[in-house]
Amino acid sequence: MLVDNVIETQGLALLESILMPFDIYNDSAQHALTVLKQRFLYDEIEAEVDLCFDQLLAS
Image (tube, rainbow, N blue to C red; front, side, top):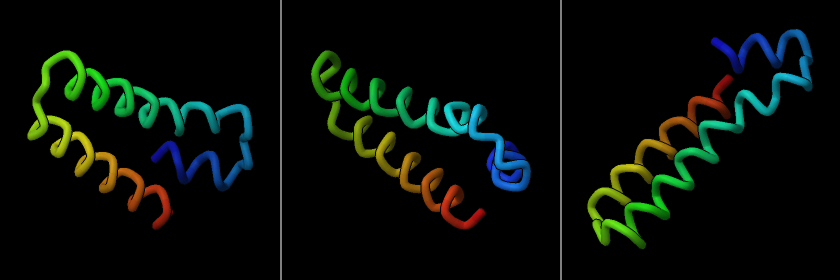
């Protein structure tokens, strides 16, 4: 897993690779609310981010 590799090698240059998906989720959530006006889609994106964040912290 990318997170494990970055932590073990202390590859700070790869830290952006871990955080990039969260930025994509953020953009998607904003698009779901503002353009599509779909709250349920936003809720699904938020749940996915919560799962990813929990996995990141567990590593």
